[in-house]
Image (tube, rainbow, N blue to C red; front, side, top):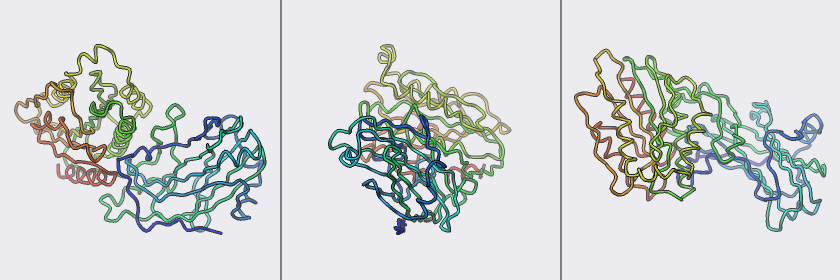
Length: 417
């Protein structure tokens, strides 16, 4: 039996509680240990009759709750589908104290042509699970608009039992898409890669978005992001996680702009420690390992006494950084400076220096401010006071769709230069 999981409208996730955008596979029960991608005694699919199982149709030898969500737009502008399998402790304990669970996912076209290699997640349960808990697989896959068949196998190597599920999925085109050619070069299907050291961090995909910029004059594009969390949300872990996710996602999308002529660079600032934690000139491929390490440091609650004492200068550090980047002589022949500031709404400590930038002459630059609102009450921002003399074009962003529209408008602007 095939269940229809199609959706007439594509969901766009908001940033409110947006941690769901980058969740990785997890086990809810403490007694279960997660192993991703076949580490530690991997499953050889040739060792089980998986083709026979798939041909035999759906079955559930292991009681489970299995669900496939509707497609949604990620902040990095990829379309994603999440799916989840839950097995209760009661049902697992009935068949033994130890289990080695494998969850195998694969996707085909609507006529059965495989589109990607299987994705395998493993869960090792080494003792009886406490009552009221459950083992949970939470997975996701990035897809292009189209019709697909999703195939799933849950296999317990300890007991030999298995489940099979199949779901039809329709991923609709974005209505009124401002970037209709964005997915021209990416694969139809791609499973995000999860960093072992950051299981709740972003899942990276290698497919490249198609974002050409047909500019007529040479451009010097600088992406400037605040990696440190907004001071007003200190201690609010969910909001801080959202800040990290939208920052990385926005940089992932923006860094894929392809200029006809010019250069692009990225800088990641830690306003708390007064440091430029990440800097990459001449971006072709972003050094994601270094950027994620910088983000991890910026998000760390371990702050020196010296940094805490200088907290009223956090705003001045941001202003001075921008001053250095826009100062200097620029001629008509010089590349036009394009500064794209990526921040969340930011409130500084009471008494902080909010003196605006001092501009002498024409900076020969154009500034865009992509300002993320992390929740519905996040309406105050003091960075805008600092950069006001630059006359930035500001985009207030609540959803991934908002970012998509902003990128489209920035590209159109740059193509006029």
